[in-house]
Amino acid sequence: MRVKLSGMDRSNRSARHRWALAICWNVAVLLASFGGFSAAHTGSILVAILQVIAPSLDASTVATIHFAIRQLAHFSEYAVLSAFYAHAQRPSGQTVFLLRWSAVAVSICAATAILDEWHQSFVPSRTASPRDVALDISGAVIVQLLWAVLRRRSRSGALES
Image: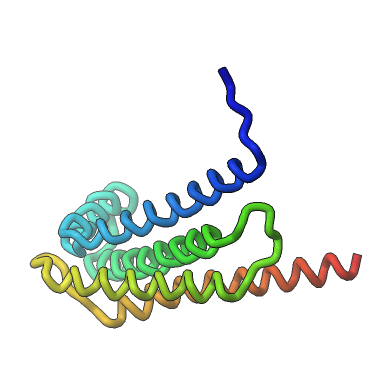
């Protein structure tokens, strides 16, 4: 037997799904601060992959690639987290995006980044770094700025049509 959902029920379920996605991603980000994602561990995996793909790379180049990948991971995981939290706040069917949603999303990301680095200070194979917090927050901010630019362009394009 199928139960038909009213518009309000669908809207609430959609909102719960958006919040669940944001919270699950947040948990995944925090779980990555355990030892399994330390530079030594991810470095050994990358070295094994690069030995197959590009065996002629020297150790310095491998170290540079590893550093770049880790920095990109910091930036992108918080960009995604910021996008999920901003989207979670949007009521179903609302097309107007409020700046408040971006501010809340970035604030949650900043708190998560600080908590993450604080936790890493207690994990023997990890190191806490204020630079990582800044990189994490920059990922969160930049995705919100990109959304603002895209929204502005889409609104101006709609007005010109």
